[in-house]
Length: 188
Image 1 (cartoon, helix red, strand yellow):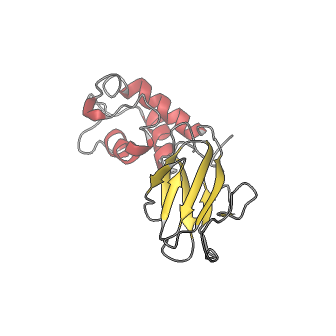
Image 2 (image 1 turned 60 degrees about the vertical axis):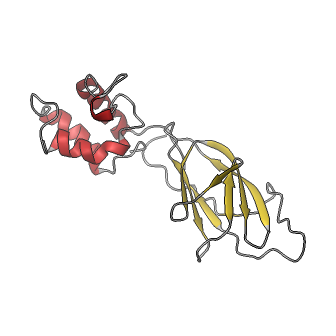
Image 3 (image 1 turned 90 degrees about the vertical axis):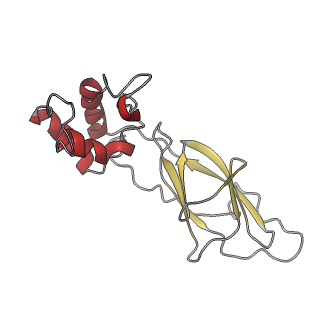
């Protein structure tokens, strides 16, 4: 796949899909308004996410693949591609289950070009078993985390140029800059 893959717009109403087991409660009806989801795709870096939206602050317990998850601002991050079982329990005891699918995506062309430059020219110090400053530029999953620091050190030389002998040639800096300027993600 090329370029950015947009949200997969999988608006799922929990517990009311054919793949779900529905609402379970010992008495009474389950409230309507279980959260809807938007699901993003994931690269091999476990960067998929689920965004929960209900138009109100969500309360209750969320479990993904049997593990309790505490959504950060109603977003669950760091998910791998594939199928995941999602369970939601509200404070009243209603539980809904469903299966969500996070599609896989390939690394984007800008990311691949920039990661090649960084690995080739910076990975000697920032790579291996004990990378300098704990930054492994040979690991593609760490590059997006450090995109702004890469911009400061490799492109602007702030607070000091990287690599230490001096900045890379302009042709290589343009490759890194194009990736960082477009968002610094793996799918760009």
